[in-house]
Image (cartoon, rainbow, N blue to C red; front, side):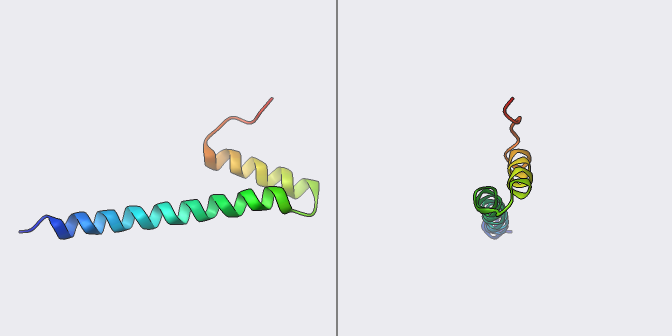
Length: 58
């Protein structure tokens, strides 16, 4: 039983997950900069902080 196809499936799934996560981060980052209202920018920055797993600045 060859192991290579299983590793390719895992690698493909990991690459797809990374691509989706990066796309979400880029979208939220753009929203935090380009949102028309301060409330939306604040919410987008809070979401970006959560996604990046960092504490908000004090």
